[in-house]
Amino acid sequence: MAAPRPWLRFSAMLLLCGGFYLSFVSAQESGGARKTPPTPEFKLPIVFEKNAAPQSIAELRAMEAHVQKVLKKIMPAVVGVRVGLGQGSGVIVKKDGTILTAGHVSGNPNQKAVVILTGGETLTGKTLGRNGGIDSGMMKITPPKTKDGSDRTFPAIEMGNSADLKPGQWVIAIGHPGGFRPNRTPVVRVGRVLFASAFVIRTDCTLVGGDSGGPLFDMQGRVVGIHSRIGGLAITENMHVPVDIYRKEWVRLAKGESFGGQLGQITQVQSAGGKLVFDKKDNLTNDDPHDRVQKNCHAKIYTFRMKAGHTYTIDLTSGDRTGKNLDTFLRLENGEGKELAQDDDGAGFPHSRIVYKAIRDGDYKVIATSFAPNQTGAYTLKIFDADFVDALVAGKANVLRSMKLPRPAVTDWVEKLAKVKKSVHINAVVIDGKGQPLANKEITFQWEKGTETVKSNSDGVVRWLFRKDKSKNLALNLPAGTRALIALTDQTGASIGLKMKDDPSIVKVKSAGGKIVKTVDGAIAKSDPFDADREKCYRHVQEFKMQAGKTYTVDLMSEDFDSYLRIENDEKGKLAEDDDGGGFLNSRIVFTPAADGTYRIVITTCDPGQLGAYRLTIRETGAKAAPKK
Image 1 (spheres, rainbow, N blue to C red):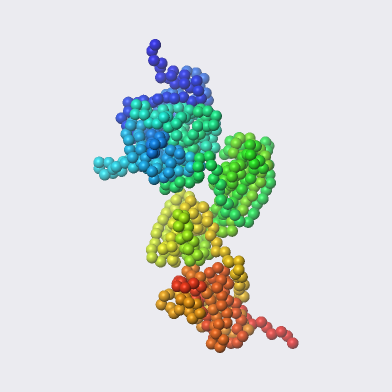
Image 2 (cartoon, rainbow, N blue to C red; image 1 turned 180 degrees about the vertical axis):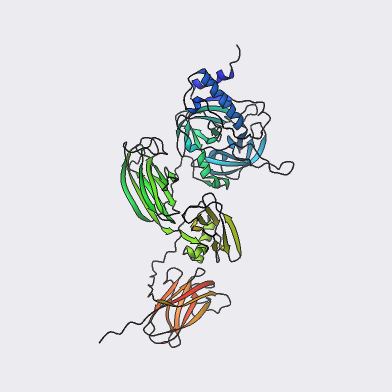
């Protein structure tokens, strides 16, 4: 009996199961990697265009011919990978050899990897970052230079938009089931999308061990997902990581970060806390309209006004603890309808949480919906406004002073975090006059002994590592016509919200107000004499004439040291002293002299050996009028 025709073998497999295997062998591809041609604009057969099932042999032939054309484009970018004893698949998405794969395939960052191109060429590589909870991973080929000394390039394939996927849409899954085999090209399966959300794609493309990390393509040959795992029901219901997640996490993955916990483990988002500013109990019902993102999911929309620089925690709590009837899903959009954030289980299953920092004043839309289609039930929506607020600066601004943070406290705190391998960053969002983020804007950090110029990313964000040796007189220089919201964050950009809270035992002294009659900007140095009262504390002395009956508020502020303030005269010596009366690290004395005279204001430090700049301010209020007789 003659061998079946290729298209007939294709048809039979398609009719037998939801997806099918197709071993694609081409004399052109057998010689190894080649340069990927420019992306063609494929005209889809009517079956693919309508996301329909084939109704005739002619339609099956059209499907096969189209898939063969797409495979010629995409096959050179599909790779086999080995990390340790584990095997999997991946896809090259940048000509420098950057590979998308599954997080459980890449494993821990900075491991040695073996990458096998479609034609069998074996190259070295290394693992980059991974999000264990979502199962996204990244690797990179690290081959030697070419003969002429230039960097080698690789066939790369473009990334599509997983947000555009719809149930019933045809897709192509490629991988190396069982691991790479030298006598077999990557195995192809064609199937359809069963479900697609921001966090997972489910298809009926059959997957087995070794396929993990392989690419899922649309019918234009664009990567829309990465194979993750077999579904709970059968090998024909399988899970893929949406490619849009890789875009959002690109910087962290490329830097080699490992985050997100373990696969299947819910990582709860930490609330920024603060004052409760919105509290609403409500219900999702069958009468509510469908959400435009979560397909066939009912939604309610709330308008909430946010202020620039404020960080908000938005909690959507389901009334059903099991999540069977209502597993909440939360989205945030700006006034123009652009999505800013979304979350499924950030507050712990089945509750959602978004922590968002507003970069401009305005009305925002909070969308309460569900993770699964057609769920209904009671929920509570709460919004909290954090205690800390980002500073809005322009021109040349002193960074710590703008954030109202004293340098010694911040640097001490940074050093403590460094011991547990945590870093602190200055996060600056560069914006225009309307509050829109500005990409590719150069801003300069300047400190006592150096400068560093950095460029904002596509979201207008600059994240600059804060270090003690770069903290003194730290300033930010912004281009004309721009502003920036600045704050302390972790390496991901999450607000830390450091606040210098007063010791509960300290009662902050209330200023008596009045006009400023003297301001002194000075600096304590090692050449200054030691204070007579405070051991090994350097000091400055300012003489000032005071009048009996008037009240003076004397403030000593510093970003460099914990200030200590004292008032003396020749007759009685020490008359008043203070450590933190003006708030933590700042001193304040409110003083009414008993007689006219010259008084000494002693400027010193709370702790021995401290140095740095300070500002002394004296305010004066007039004497009270004598009571009428």
